[in-house]
Length: 147
Image (cartoon, rainbow, N blue to C red):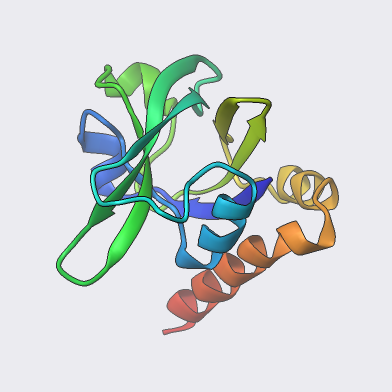
């Protein structure tokens, strides 16, 4: 299972595919878990079922792309109404995201909030090696907030 904290940004709220960029620290685990392929080429997509912050399930994909600065993975949903998909989230909210492969299916889950109790429960359920991405994201968030 891959887990990380995502800071809700305007792209997530406004774009029809509500992109969530997966942190680079998670790429090896993403590939090891079979949620991505180490031989991916830009433009490659892997089907994923997304449980949105609103609690509903949607079809989407994990997209492998290239930007001006580097390669990246993003979770994207098929174009839908933002009010239904994003729930009560606003820019700046920090939410836990989990990605897991079940058989041949990949599931991504966006949690409604980063309530400390919910974060601890999510974190406690992870194996030690799965905590690396969450800790890296927490450290990044802490550095940004102190700047």
